[in-house]
Length: 62
Image (cartoon, rainbow, N blue to C red; front, side):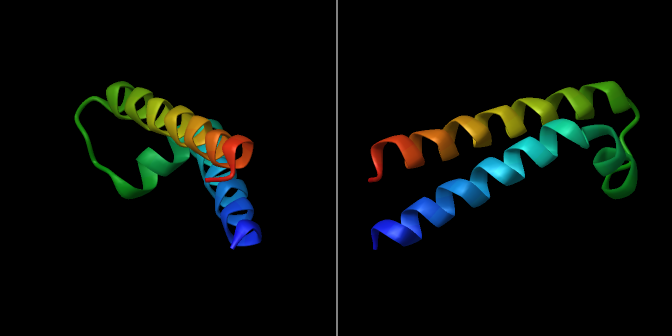
């Protein structure tokens, strides 16, 4: 069970970093917002929160 939680935490961290790094291409490909900058900012904030969540999973091993 502990190994599954560690793997989930690592995957969540990887997704968060991917969302931060590639926010603009992801928004251009999947969304058609009028204000692209706001969508990119939201994607980066979501990626940051996912990264923090994954790190908490790894640190505390719930």
